[in-house]
Image (spheres, rainbow, N blue to C red):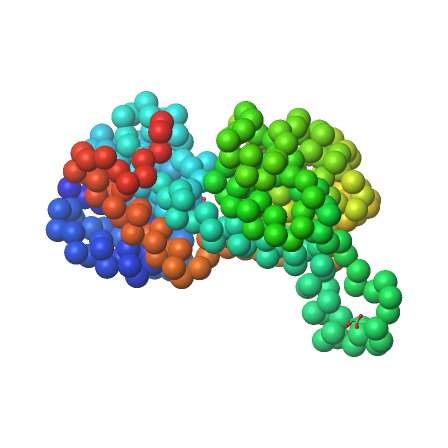
Length: 322
Ligand code: GLV
Ligand code: GLV
């Protein structure tokens, strides 16, 4: 059996790959992404593929792999880079890495929220570049979580972990929206299920932590930002395509909202000349929600174990329900 791995993965997963003698390993053994051409070549005849969220596994790649392909294992919780319908149609099993990255991603979401609402990048710049002339009553003021209303779009594993961390800051009220109410999970935060527009209108902080699906594509658009409070902060740790970035740019420049913090953009990487980078009230991070050594290593081990289980026809530790 042949396995194709599209990148050098973190050391613990890499060590596990090396130990397993059940397949012939072919790998794009580099820290840099594989080209489309090399991806199409590399997957040919593979029984298993281990890929990253930056690899687009569409019909063309599945065709290039051919009929041996039994299992795809992605080093991510998101599966929006994969042609899920086509994978299902071909009877290929899919592994992913939920749960193990929840805490790291929620931690980053809180960091990004505070960084954005308390204007840390601006403050750091001012301190360094001579803008710090004296202490001034309203200089560098932002907004705080105490007594605020936080709206969470997608109260899944990550959304709940974010709420759990924000609660001790003295948040007064949690709102959430999604495909359906999650009464059991929401009870921990007394979070109230509301329509999207109500969440926009009533939240002081909006946090996006839903999966990217056809239903959530550009969910946060002009209409949404117009409903938001002028003093509200918008944070996205899910996928860039949940947001219409032109509408966000308008909202940030027209004063419709006060600031935005994005760990994800469309495209990724976001070109350095993108207008959003020119805004002081927009903090952009390079998709680093799960980026801790521990989490990335754990993800890599889980991804390899999913792959192995799939090849052996055994239950995967984390199989995506197709
Ligand atoms: C990160 O965005 C992931 O999907 O794992
Ligand atoms: C702030 O440093 C204060 O003393 O109020």
